[in-house]
Image (cartoon, rainbow, N blue to C red):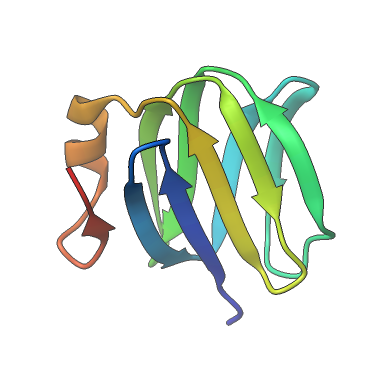
Length: 100
């Protein structure tokens, strides 16, 4: 099955880098879900829950306002000011690359 490369970054550093099957976020226009093969996209996201599907399990975290980009090579980059640390610890497994 095709995968997306998900990166969540702040101005200071990379917060998460992992391969996923899908990503859902609250865009300004409404909830969007990104699957492999999605068209290139650049959009603003609103503060709220970010969901991603990894190994058939949906994981969630709370992110601040920011931006989401989808590249033609199935890379999803989410640029935010902050991620809710408690949610992040609960939602990320030991195989994910998480930087504090």
